Amino acid sequence: MPIEQRGVDTVPEAERTSGPRDLFSILLGSNLCLGVIVFGWLPVSFGLDLWGSVTSVVAGTVVGVAVTAPLALVSLRTATNLSTSSGAFFGVRGRLVGSVVGLLLSLGYTALTLWIGGDVIVGTLARLTGLPTGGASHAVVYALLAAGTVVAAVYGYRLLLALSKALAVGMTVLLALGLVAYAGDFTAAAVPETPYLLGSFWPTWLLSAVAAGLSGPVAFITLLGDYTRYVSPERHGAKKVWRATCLGLLVGLLIPQLFGTFTALASRGALDYAGPLVAASPAWYLVPLLLAATAGSVGNAGLMLYSMGLDLDAILPRATRARATLVVAAVATAFVFLGHFASDAQTAMTSFVLLLTAIGTPWAVITLIGHARCGGTYDPEALQVYNRRSRGGIYWFSAGWHPRATASWAIGAAVGLAGVSTPLYEGPLLALTGGIDCSFMLSGLVGGALYAVLTPTRAPETVPAVSEALAEVE
Image (cartoon, rainbow, N blue to C red; front, top):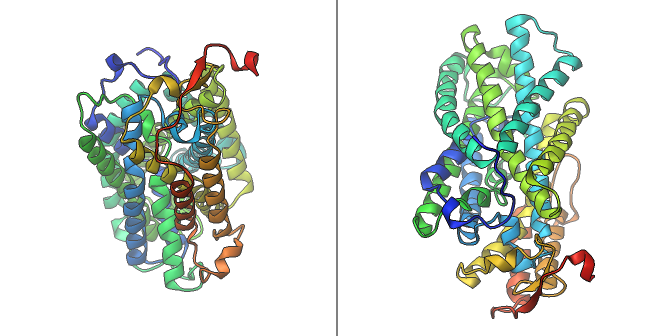
């Protein structure tokens, strides 16, 4: 299988050979991993029982899918990734907002997947072979996982699609075996001596709905276009693509997350997930658990790393996708070591997902409003102006930026950050919301409302394109 050469340029119609089934497979297979499973542990670590955990995760995921899934239709029309596509609304330079948001989201989730997967691998090998569990073992395992992830990401979309199809079947079998393995220790009650993180049920439930449920689909706000750009709108209708996206996100996220809740309750893992999960595993399930931790981590982290490479390629047009992928892989691996040796898992995860959700939601809402306004009609050539180091075109706006759209996002993100509640930081707006984290709703509503009011509905004026490098004309 050849290495994919295409970056964030427009995918020709002849290469758009994927379909809704491929989209479903990649969303399902890539998410059946410990990096997603661990989010099912979060509600239990917050002090919720089975009912509270399941309802909060399901509610948050459904809301997140409703907001996120329509974004898949943008790249179906533009044939490029979502951050580049957002140039239609933010400007061909302003689309860097989406690239940075996507880069941060993928960076965090890549590091998280390698972190949790590596910890489970080390713990499982310690039980199977007596491997020491010190820092050296973790360092070697993290490095090997990162290397496997880099190979998958560098080879690109076709390899990741084939891997996801295999994981969709293999990981489903391994998780089904896990239900049997942990059934004897399962209890529907909350883990003893785990008080509600926010003091009472409903505030904690809402925190879980955002941090464990909504954050899953939001992680895909810039990723969905990486897959739908390879789907042809001439052969596959928008409704079929939307349905496949919804189904893939719902099934692909809820199965691993609810498995995480089940095993967290079974292993009594209130303060940690990986250690109790391995300790509570019967001997016969250790090898399947090792396979799940290895293959699932490479599949999920590979997809995230692939997206990171595209986002960095979009930020630095001179970089090739493969080189950009290697750079972000090194950064993600550094974050893995930082997470293992310097952070508490619950604190790091909760803070990360809440902060990034507050920043990413207004970008997604503005992009969706813009897509609805233009009726899904784009100028693919004009979207590539920045990548070609030229200027002009219908999306040039003001020096390549749409100031009002960018300001709408910035204000929405600022309001969201002011309303967030994490173990590390609490925003000043919490006094107005009764201490309940409404950051994603506030950021999305404010950013979307400002964009709708401040920007005209008429088509932008075309600026004549200049076919010369930006560095030479500015």
